Length: 155
Length: 155
DNA sequence: TATTGTTATACTCTATAACTATA
DNA sequence: TATAGTTATAGAGTATAACAATA
Image 1 (tube, each protein chain N blue to C red):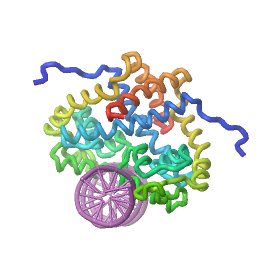
Image 2: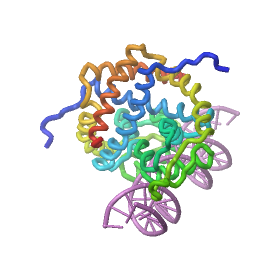
Image 3: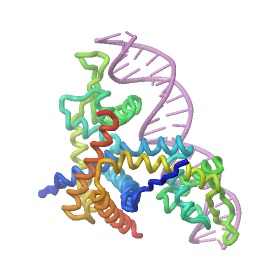
Image 4: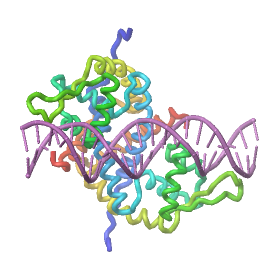
């Protein structure tokens, strides 16, 4: 049926397509810099950032939730980070079903080793072509979209 | 050394983080709708859109360039689309090294089968929380970023 | 020789389901 | 019984390098 057609506005289509393509062009660059400077991939870097923000450590479930990844997917990534010596995983004394994952000194160093180049990359790519005002608008709009998406997930 | 630290502004960090997380939350939704409504994955849908916009057909190299993917990666995706009957691939009579990839009627139908739900999904997610003016600003800024990224690739 | 594309191969990431162990 | 996490397994997607065919 679909008697009425409700296409997106030209602006909306342009925004979505540009969003997708910017992501497609940014991701490989970001990934390459993370690997070169710190020896970690994007998902691993994400885990490190989550753990750096939680010095007391996080359970696997908590990290998996932050990362929007399955339990087994997180086990895989944390295994890789343990192999690299960047995090530890230990039984939680309060509940022995749980594991507490903590970032190590080397993990903090890895973030530090990556950081300057990461920032420089973002500055030279994502932020090079827009004004400070544009960036403020981007942050505001993207954050609104983000809050809406989270609310749809019931958070 | 790095005597001077040049961190990103809070707005810039917020914009980048929100960009990443919006992408992380949008992609699985988009993917699920494409698979459910049209039986195709995101990369396959991208190939179909590129071919729909080029009724005369495209060579593998042209499609690979549009998709920002390696030659072998594109061969893999086009093989999948051929299996589904959504595209054809034939020797180019003008240069027999080349293959001309064309979308089939079923491929056009697959795009049509996906389209309404795809638009509805975008409307209910990405565009639900921002005004038309915000969308126009988003389109403008993201397009500027995109042009800059393309220029860095020498295009 | 250079270009177009495929094939062989390997690797990363992710998920589902079955399982272990604790609560 | 329910929860936290791991393991076994499989599958999608991607890339590199070697190759075949054509220009």
